[in-house]
Length: 139
Image 1 (tube, rainbow, N blue to C red):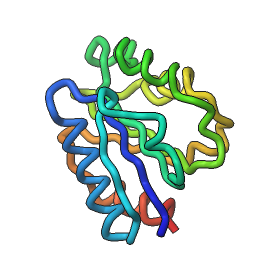
Image 2 (tube, helix red, strand yellow; image 1 turned 45 degrees about the vertical axis):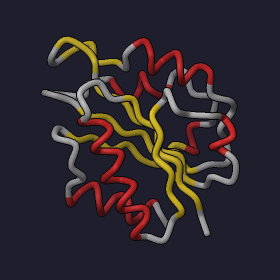
Image 3 (cartoon, rainbow, N blue to C red; image 1 turned 90 degrees about the vertical axis):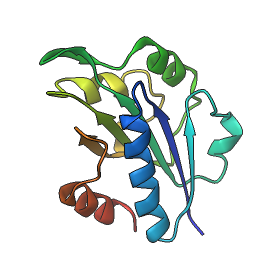
């Protein structure tokens, strides 16, 4: 059975909720799925994982200068090399995501070809477009 690990950093609970929605979808697709916050994460959690979901909330000035907050960046910098996993980045936002995904990728130690998808949600819900994209990513 393929495994998915969903790691999130949430300020108000919206990103945690989005991670849980993604987890429900993964479970429906038959993946063994684990959801943890960046505070609960242990490097051992990466063992045997085929799909790695990394999520955080969008920090910034409403419509410009969006970026992950400092705590998420510190977490991402500490991750080991994560090649050979299918990586999905996800974020929640109020108005716009701007350069959020580009900045989320910066501290990751992986070849960009392993980043398969970027998902965003304003309300923590996985919409129809996100469901379609995930369906094509999880095989």
